[in-house]
Length: 454
Image 1 (cartoon, rainbow, N blue to C red):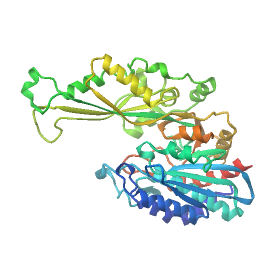
Image 2 (image 1 turned 180 degrees about the horizontal axis):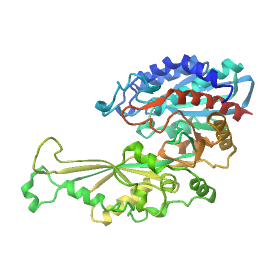
Image 3 (image 1 turned 60 degrees about the horizontal axis):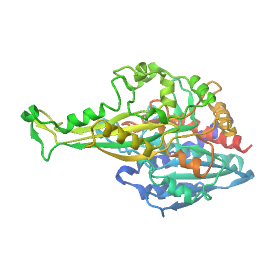
Image 4 (image 1 turned 120 degrees about the vertical axis):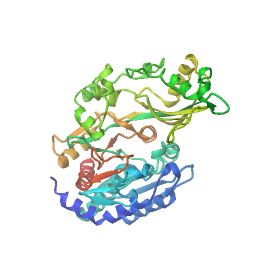
C-alpha cells in the first residue's frame, strides 16, 4: 500500500462518470462509427485535466490526439514520459451474448461492463486520473507527460507510422508507457516489454461461375475443398508450420531473454478453465513449452472460414467460392511482407496458384531491451502497489500493437501496464474490468511518474 491509495480512489470516483460517458460513445473503427466524436471528446478530457491538446488529422485515417502536461514547479522538466493509448474499440458482435447493453456501462459485482472498458478506454482514463490526483496532492507533476492517442489500433494502425515520422519532435520523450496490461490467473500484474507483430491475410478461391448441384461432386471439385486442401498444407495435424523458409526467419533470443521466459509462470489449468477449452494445448505436440510459444515463437492460425450453404436445414450445392482469414503472429525476424512472400511461394509450389492471397494488415514485432533502467522503474513502482511477489515482467505479450514505430521514430523503451484482469474479455462479449483494479491502476501510474522523475 502506498500513501497514494486514498487519493487515487477519490479521483477515480470523481471521474467515473467521465469514463462512463467515454464508454457510451460507439467508437468502432472497423465501421467508422463515433470516430470524430470520440477524438474530440478525448481531446477535451485532456484539456479539462489541465493539459494542452491538439487533433492531428492531416495524414489520412482517423485523427490522432496529442496531449501535453508540463512538469510542476518542483518537478523535473528535463524528463518526459509518453503515454500511448487508443480510443477505438472492437465491434460489439455477437450482441445476443452480452448480458448488458454493450455501450451502456453497467456495474455488476464491483465490475464495470462495457465494450472498450478494458481495451482501452479505462487505461486511458487511469492516466488522466493519476495526473489530476498528483497535481491536486503535490501541486504539480514530477515530470512532463505527453499523450499519443490514436483511433485505428483495432484495425491494425495503418497510418500510425506516418504520424510518428512527421510528428516525431512533437511526441519526443524519454520513455513510453503502453496501453495494455492486466493481472493473470494468480492475480499477478503482468508488465509487458514488447508485442508480437501480425500478418493478417485473406485467402480465397473460385471454382466455377455458379454454385452447382452437389450430384456433380462425382466429377467436379469445389471451392470449399480446394481451399481446405490448400490450408492443410500450411500447418500439419500436429500444429507444425510447414511453409518452407518460414521457421528460418526467426531471430534466436538472447540468453537474458531465454532466462526471462524460463522464469515466466504459466498456469495451464487456469487457461483451460478460463476459456472452457475442449482440446489439449497445441504445445503438447510441439517441441517447445507453452511459455516459449506465447512469447518466443510465431503462430499460424485460421480466424474465419466462409463457403457454401450454412443456413438451417439442407441445401445440396458445390460452392463456387471459399474464403479464409489467416492470422500470423510475428516475433523478431519476421516482417509482414516477407511472410506474404514465403506463403505465396509455398502455395504456388504446392499447386495452389489459383488461391488468391491478400495481406490485409501488417504490424512488425517489437521488444524493449529489458536491461534498460526504465524497466526497473516500472517493475519497482508496480511492486509498491501490487506487492513484491505479485509483479511479473514478460518479454513481450502474445498480442499485437504498433510498438515498432515508436521504437523506430521516437527511440524509447516501452513497457505496458493497465487495469485489466484475466477475465476482462477484451474483444469478447461482456468485456469488463474490476473497479478495484482500476483504482490500483491509477495508483500505479502515480507512483511510476514519481519513480521515473526521481
